[in-house]
Length: 387
Image 1 (cartoon, rainbow, N blue to C red):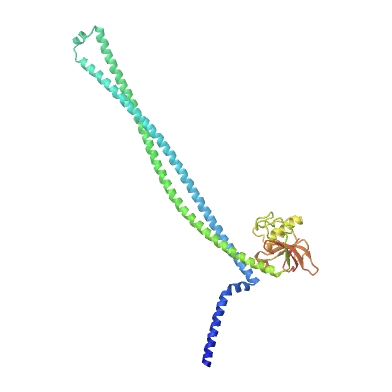
Image 2: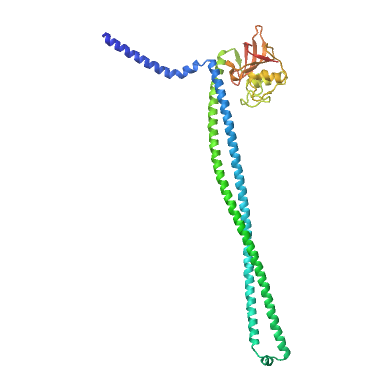
């Protein structure tokens, strides 16, 4: 093999080794990244994620309020539409009643017109008779009658019949006119009601348009809310992942024994449910509050809802008249500030005893996730003690 061939072979091998090295880094980079995450890195990630969660939660609260307001407007419009429909139904019922009354009046008018026609026919016959008899001479009337009294009686009867028929015609005409006036009045009312129904129908149509627009805004806001909620869930999952790594580092540090419940009554409850003291079950705060209240018989609760994290317990102690010291004692609550292995919320535990070398033995919850454990020979450095 010549030197030139050897050099070419060496360059080829070097190139292949470089390619393989890059591929190995690409394959194992995710695992290298996880392993390289120091406690300070995880703490910073957790703090950053907590800020993101708070910002997203604020945005979600605002969007939930917007959705609620839009839903209220939609409900109000639906109520107005329903009320308008009731008005339309009521007006239509009145129109139906008027139609029945108008139909009844039409029947009465038709009946009176028929009666009037009969009376007019009777009057015509009577007038015809009077006319025919009026063309007879007095001699013919007398000769055609049995007596003079018959002549007088006959003329009186014809005159009375004619007068009665005229009276009937006048009465029927008055009734007919009255009925027609009532009919006209009802028709006016009917027209007014029809106009009202038309106006209400227009109003309802406009309300329906407003409701459709508001429903579209509601759907849009609800979709945005769902997206924000999804972002929140994803960010919380990221924070849970970081928290899991912090828990793993805690377990790797050793120095604890796990198992049992320490008598804590919510050991089997769903995590992070409200407890009687204003904290959340299976958290370090809930365990310490239970121990102080039920085991030591001291009164302790969350005086600052929303700010009851473990790091802030010295402030809660001041609220309730307890002493806070940097010197540990048995039965005290130990409160560590946020940061490092204590995460973004800090940590609290119950001091079981103080060792001769100044270290402490503690019982606690959620040092191992949502579980009871005891740690021994713990450094009291940085902790504050409440008693």
